[in-house]
Amino acid sequence: MGWRGYAAAFAVGMLIAGGAAWKAQSWRYGAEIAEMKFDQAARVADSQRQAREILERRVAEVGQINEQNAKAEWAAYGGMRNAQVQD
Image (cartoon, rainbow, N blue to C red; front, side, top):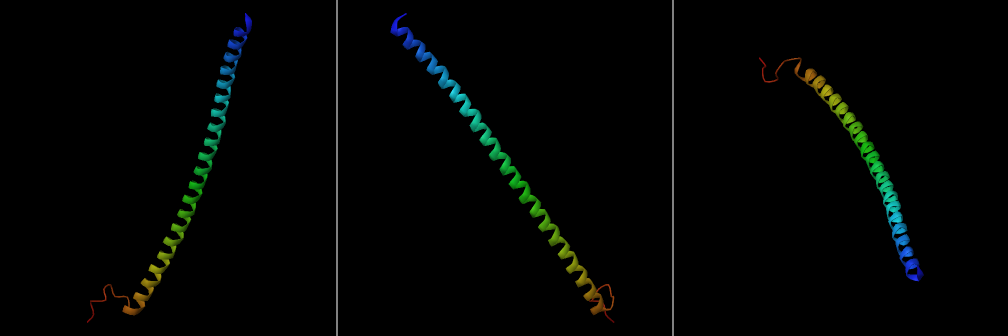
């Protein structure tokens, strides 16, 4: 077989080892990317939850303001349906 056979076997072994290392790295990077996507999705979900809470608070505040304005209008115009209609 000689040294050329050993060199060829070594080269084939290195190719196989290189391919295996390449595949292992791709799995590792795939796992890292999946973890990054999961983290990003969690941050987006948290941001959306916070935005919904802020919107709910603002809607409630606007409802209270509208109720206060309605009471003030009722007090100012004596319960008339339209302030324009006065005798």
